[in-house]
Length: 133
Image (cartoon, rainbow, N blue to C red; front, side, top):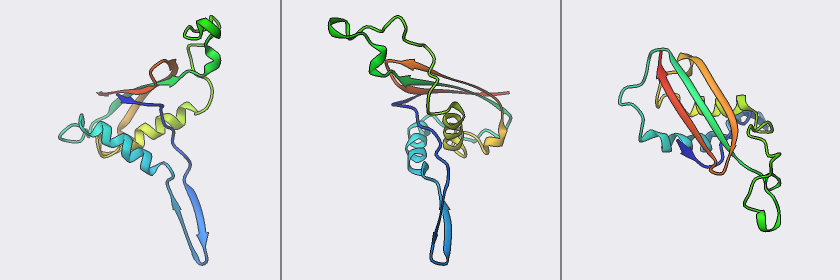
């Protein structure tokens, strides 16, 4: 589990400076921070077998999901359970896959099954379960 608002994979950026051109990963620092939190639970030996990845992204609720005035701590009856806005689920999953690569498993190509969802929560976080198949 990683506490905090879930992060998504940003697209690689390309640049040209004179005759030099290159690219960089704008999510690089965020991935390193995310991975360092999960490092303490990492296996001693990297997983090298097919795996299943189960990820739940608990997104913080916006203010408009709550009532107003004296009841401002209570959710509206119309407040949704599932998060359907940005960031996109596939970008959130890709961020997790890339962050765990070479820390939990040898290569994210070993992921044979993925289950993922985005739901609202009072406590934003990312919960990850890795299972050998």
